[in-house]
Length: 108
Length: 111
Image (tube, rainbow over all chains, first blue to last red; front, side, top):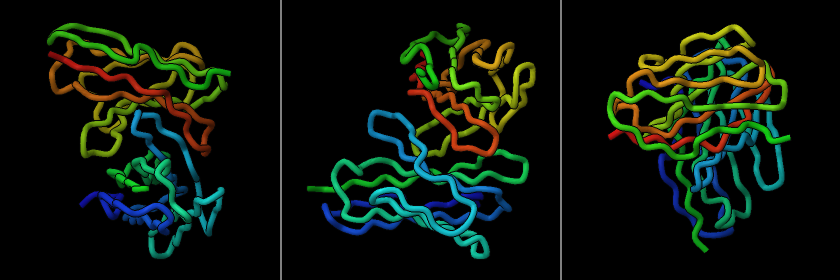
């Protein structure tokens, strides 16, 4: 079993839909990261959080430390949100453990 | 401020050849790392460094060497390329505890 699991693996939605991507982990962590990888391959950090909730534009990330679970939400989704979204946790040894990613396609 | 710069962007090698992937950052980050990304898999850590003169192995270090003689540069060397090393390689840097900044990646094919 992977230490960081994301669901779903693939998600296709219509423009405007509310999107939720989930991340569950099984190790103790000091922080959790959400990243976005564009079709061209570039990787961008979206959020780093260790508790609660963060919001940036149409993106919202939440984390529940007790349940070892985080969610990334996209409101009013747009085709330009199409990308792979990656969850990664930083463990007690300061190492990043990566999820396999969720491929999101938003259709116009 | 260029961020994290990786060169080359693409490279094709023959089995047994050696080469160095370059990574440079101009943000004075102490933490740098190399990952490989294979289809259907998450990024896997190859080697990392927490400061100049200090390197350590990640999850998949075999077949790769690194050095960190300066804060800015963290080259990754393939000693004798093998087809299993065909992958996309990402270099990243950060301050400790802060989000990582990624290079654009190097697509490497080993024939």
